[in-house]
Picture 1 (cartoon, rainbow, N blue to C red):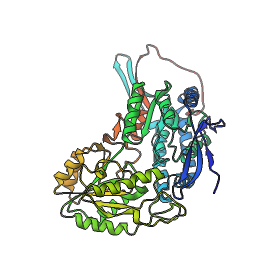
Picture 2: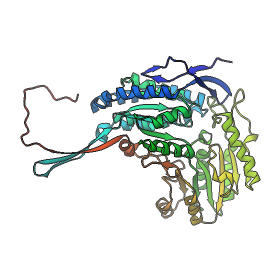
Picture 3: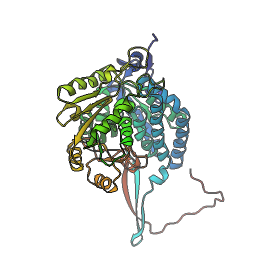
Picture 4: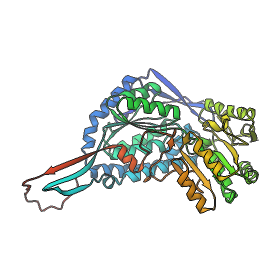
Length: 499
């Protein structure tokens, strides 16, 4: 058994050298072995880090867009070079298979590429002679120190939804990653220094509720970006806004996939398996409720069951299809829903507890699980399980399915599978969900559009990345000016440069 590695904060571009009063274990979910000891920040340490970021911020805010863009391009190249290493860190601490981890890093890389266009994204407007000799123009300026609090399920991609845009806009970032799988975030943060970002502009503090509360209440923190469960998202939003901060808090989900009788059932079955069991179902965009419009449910379930039988669950480094859940406690919580589902009247079609796993040691495994005859009111349907459990809900019509989806308190993602363009257009118009897929099971927007749901899946007005992200991390200012005798001069035969 190896000695657990110390994992610590990244402050001023360097690993923290202090002694932590409290620590937290980090595990390899595929083996159950403790691999790391994580330093947890006290409120006083968070205060020191935020204060340091505030002192460094003005210099970065005054940096030209040309300089910022140079750093962003350099960071993009470094992340692209090291993406396999980052993916390996994710698999070692989260458990998702390597191909899935690499895909996560790649999607985060797309946001960095979007942020490289910051000179275009921050362009303001100009009106000449709005009144006689009076010009009016608009500009956008950075906020200051911004906090990002990210979840365990995407330790690289979710921080990357926010950080490149925040930095490109001229802010200083303090990141508090999940204590379950922190190493990928630290590795990515270190790349910013290598890319030429000044010390203090990208800092990482690890911690639990004490660190989170310190960020939510610190007077120098101007905004908070959060992704996690709905109860915590609501708490972050209410606490942060009560302390005068701009907050975007993305919460939980219960994503439905509506399958109409005219759909290609092979395509729908593939999509249900991919979207339901990828990353062990630990995705806020996972499909957890498959809504089958009769009379297709029996045939669709048969096709899904057949595909599930071909999946291999095990260590993510061994070419398996699905890895473990992130912790033993979370695995036990997810498995508790299986007995509850049977007790509440659902039919357990495939029991993931009876599978064998391709791994050494006692990993935190549950194989893909399928339920039929699930109904609202059952815990299987009402709760965000956040595991590899797919529930089939049978409905008699499109209208019944749409009503079911719109009645759900969550509104993160949804999908419709059909060959009827009119039905698809009607669905995307009337469904009360923030992200919609048409024959696409996981409709995560590309980086230049924005990510976010409706209802209890989002607290705040701004979605992540895209132009909403640019607006979130900046404040608008309008200038009205009159120059009665403008003049300038001097000789300089050199070619004009952006400096």
